[in-house]
Each structure stands twice: as structure tokens, then as C-alpha cells.
Image (cartoon, rainbow, N blue to C red; front, side):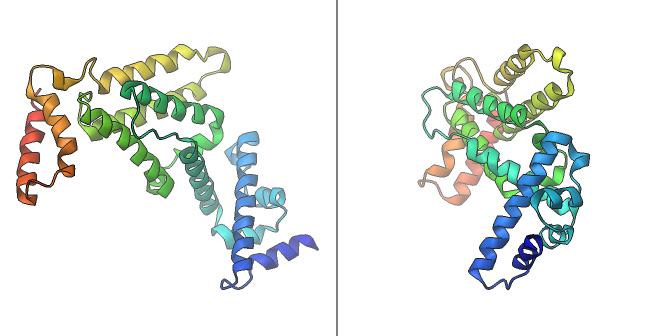
Length: 248
């Protein structure tokens, strides 16, 4: 009875390295089976029984590994965030910051279009924003935004810029997927991307223009890297820079 043998492996003592490895392999097999069902037949097809059969397990093994169906779906979503994170290319010093922004946005959209059911599951619950992989991905996005700010390209606050970039990519994917295939116009994606670029960046670095707002944003992002000022002085200067950056 190979299925029961697998189930016994899942229940082996936690102190055993072999048991821990076997448990992780079983978890991965279940998650992959769930993703396959999700992409082929939709979310309703992802039942604990169907996933167990697809993974070659008895249904109780799913409950031991994930608690319940919601726990399984959370694990599937986390796997999706981790796969997306692994696909991201991080250039710490891109030649063209605006093109780097476009490339990051395109990658996010392409991942969603290539994994429609998984992507929809990943963003179906607001609580999944607590995912470690999701947070790591957002840090990569914030790195792009900080480089734009440091170069004087950013025309809005860093947090707002990150939200706009993330929201437009997510909205582009979900809107595209909601359309019948014969009505999916690639111009939608290009237009949304360029609208995002126009919303968060200036045509020229703001530090080359008259007015203090762009220079304030550039200085604000570089402020934590200097050691000349005391903590109190940094706090006061940041308050002034925030007021200057918001005054355009």
C-alpha cells in the first residue's frame, strides 16, 4: 500500500531529518498538484479530496500538512509569490531608471498572464499581503522607487509611487483576464504601463528643474546614508524635506 506508506512518512517524528525532508517533499507535491488543478479546472476544483488523489495521498494527509482547505490555498498562494519573486531580475545600478521601471512592471504583468488562476488566487485575499515572499517582492519594488527618487525622477511620494506601480500592474492583469479572448487588446497593457510611468515620474530629473520639491525628494531618500547629522537633526531635516516635497 504505497499511499499509506507515504502517509506514515508524513507522521514520522519531527526530530528526524529524513522525516522533515520527506514532509517538505510531500508538501511540495501537494502544492504542485493543487496548482495543476487550479490552472486546468479552476478554483472550485481544488478540493482536499481531489488534491489528495492527484498527489497520491489519502485526504487526511492534507489536513495534517495544511490544517484545512484554506491553509492549503494559502500555501499555494505563498508558492506563487515565491515563484514570482524568483523570476524577478534585480539590477542594483540600471543604466536607465525609467526603462528599469518599465521592465519590472512588464515582468509582473507577464507573470500574471502566464499563471492566470494562480495569480487570481494570490491576490484574492488582502491578508496574503503578510506573505514573506510578497513582502520581499515589495522591497524590490521599493528599491526601484528609491533609485528613481535619488535620481530626482520621482514626482510623487515614494509610498504612493509604489502603490501606483503595484496597483496598475495588478489591475492590468485582472482586467485583461476578465475580458473574452477575442477582446484582449495588447494596447491596454501598453497604455496602462505608460500611464503609470507618467503618473510617478517626471520627463526630466526634477533636480534639474527650478523649485525645491524634486531636490527635497532626492535628498530625503539619501538622508539615511549620511552620518554627519545627529538623529534629532535628521528627524528635523526630514520634516522640512517632507514639507518641501509636498509643496509643488
